[in-house]
Every structure is written in structure tokens, then in C-alpha cells.
Image (cartoon, rainbow, N blue to C red; front, side, top):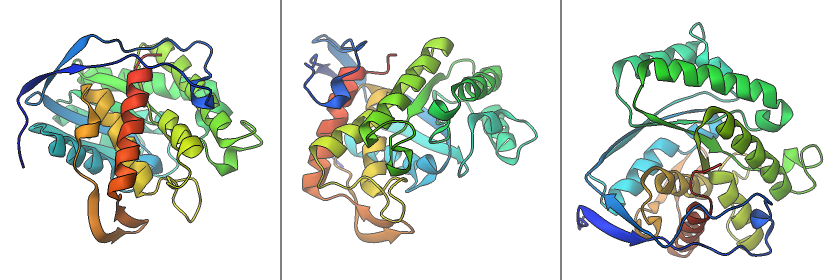
Length: 283
């Protein structure tokens, strides 16, 4: 692989909103400017994802690592603790099987970044429980990981949410985004706006299916690929449009093909770049 220079200067433009729902948040303020940002491709990133099936489908942690490697990051690694349908409160529970796994990892490793993902609907179905669980897990993490940067992973709307949490899938995602922002503000955390990217693709690039075809809820490989791009941009600040990893052609896992076409990858990288430069990780 052709390596990039260890330090580059990336011009980050401020983006102007459009009429799409994904830009209709009335409190939106651009988080990026035209200032130059230094990117050190030799900086160490040791990342822990904590979440449920939206994290373990297609091995999101490994997709993110492979994207980083393809961009020239030399010391990027990612791990996970994930269980389907889990809530952050369960990961905070020292008596829970996966809560014990979290505790073991944070006791025995030094992470630079930790990403927390709540149950798919909990932030809007029971915000108080979401905030309580996030608070408890954050307290547990900070006991052992005093230097790690901890962020929330904002997820996306899907068919089964429509009618209860919004009139459309993007409206459901907007409700999720606001819940994640409120929690982040309360706990002084960053947010990785993956759901924003899903809504943008859903509205503007409908030919790309980000959802697992069996349930139209979980991520397809393309969905996990977009998620990995937004996480990587949020972690490093780098221009993810330079990533060359697209998966592996003619290779399949339980959820389908593990490859994104060149055309779709170009679109998804552009979406991830724009979402990060519009929202950053700010609340």
C-alpha cells in the first residue's frame, strides 16, 4: 500500500444547508470552518465499540479498521463488546455477562476512544432510561479509562419506527438525533452522527440500500460501510474520501455480500465527508 505522509494539512470547508430534512434542525450551527486541520497518520488509535446488533452486524469495528488502514493510518485498531438488543444500562451492570466483558476490556487495555451505542429505539421510547444507562456506563468507563475520549453513536430510523416516532424514516432519525444530542450535552460527550448519513442517503441516493433486506432495520454491508466512514471521520478528522477499502468482491457473510461498488463507495464517502463537516461531533 502506498503510504501517505505522516502529517498533512486538510482544508475543511463549512457547508451550507439545503432543503433536505437532514438539514432542518433549527439549532444547527456548522461545526467546521475553513481552518486547516493537522492529521497525523502515525497517531495511535485504540478504539472500543460498545453496542448491540447495529455494532456487530458486518463487524463494524473491523470495517472501520480496514478503512483506516486503507487511508494510511499505521496504528489504528478497533475492538467491540456487542450483544443484540442490549441497552447501555446492561453493559454498565457488573453482574451482566456483557457488562463483565466491558469491565475486563477496560481493566486490561488502554483505549484512546470508546464509542457507546444505545438500543435502536430506547433514546426516543424512554429517554430517561437512555440517559441513566449512559450515565452509569460512562461512570464505569471513566473509572478505568481516564484518558479515553468517549462518544455516542447516533443510529438511524427504520420502517418499524414510523407512525410511533415520526411520520417518515428521516423524521424518526431526527428524533433519535435530538435525543442523542441531549444526552451528549448532559454528559459532555461527542456524537458520531451515523443516522444523519443514513437519512441523507435515504433521501438523496435511494438506489443504495443501507438496510439488511430481511428486516429493513439492521445495516447492510453498505450501511455498515457508511457507519464506519462516519466513525472514522469523527475519530480522526481525516478526509474519508481518500479511503480505498470497499470490502471484498464475491465474498459473503450471514447478511449478504461484503462489498460496495466503486460508484456506491464514492457516494457514501462523499456523504460521510459532508455529514462530518456539517455536524462534526458537537451537540
